[in-house]
Length: 477
Ligand SMILES: CC(C)[C@H](C(=O)O)[C@@H](O)C(=O)O
Ligand code: SF4
Image (cartoon, rainbow, N blue to C red):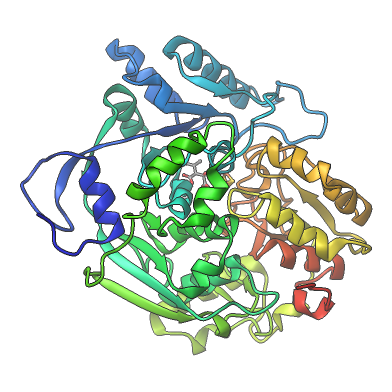
């Protein structure tokens, strides 16, 4: 019945309730069944208010899970309360919605609390072949497991909760083939930042972006999540990787994972979750992994980035359509063309976010920090991606390494990734950050963000300026 299909199309076909326009291929309008969703206190309130007003129930409450992550405090001694009454109102309304609509919610003090996109994989709740839609753009993270994940707006959240379906437009297909292997000291964050720089912040707009190739296969699951998470920063609506044995072993044994026997049974079905030979992609890019070096952003869009050995670009040397944005970005960032990136001093260092605050990320940074100190005048903090990750890190003694180096060991939440709580840059402060967005004001009004990997943040914290982590020559194999 079908010809050669992409992984994306296979999953969409399996979830198509009905076509709405009889179309085929990209642009087809259809009604899509959604397997699971995650809710947060920031984007879900109006959806629940809408349900209340219409007198509707949630169709399948057990297909949803709520986590407080965006506005909560990350103070080590936090309570369930925050000072900001608006934020407290969101937290309280969220809890009430969970009760009234029968949805399980992890509140701030729940030991499973954390950033939603860290919590779901932590739980083993993200499975190959699922469709997961949620009120947050970084829902693309789940593509690392071969699950179609995408962000939706508030009215769509309401529709999803009421019906377990969404009207959907089938995306175009794009593939990024990453050949060869990453060099020592180069991470998944560098890979995805290099891709974003190459194709631009809208380079994958309107596409489901599948990652394939030796370099992707060689990555562990958490590194794959970093890539799928940040794929939205080049406009991808969906990111995907074919699930393999690494994905299955990551899932197995987690609190909400299917039993080992069920995973065994599912293996046959999951192994078909691959793009068929000859399937059509509207766009393909090929990257050589060996060419990638540690990346840092210099501007106010994730594609305004360069390798750490480069200098701040002169806007006049860029493509004409990029010049004005670059000039504006350099003015905002307080940077002069020609300045070596490694000469840029920092005030703050932040390791956190759903991109780069999983256990392996904390290990990477701790490896750099062991036996070293954060430079004087740099305030450094780490907010583990989830409370579970925080405990796991403590069990390994990583907290001691961070604290001894001069980092604040915080609780979990979105934190300085978007500064909706007390974790905010002062105007003009410059931050080396393991997050995903460097937009103006993202980390605080007039704050300046440089995106990079967690190991690179650790190196910047130690030197007091942006730095090549490889120059610390401590990267054990
Ligand atoms: C608050 C939310 C709507 C937003 C998103 O959708 O991504 C946030 O998580 C972000 O990272 O900017
Ligand atoms: S950690 Fe950052 S990117 Fe992730 S959901 Fe929170 S605000 Fe969004």
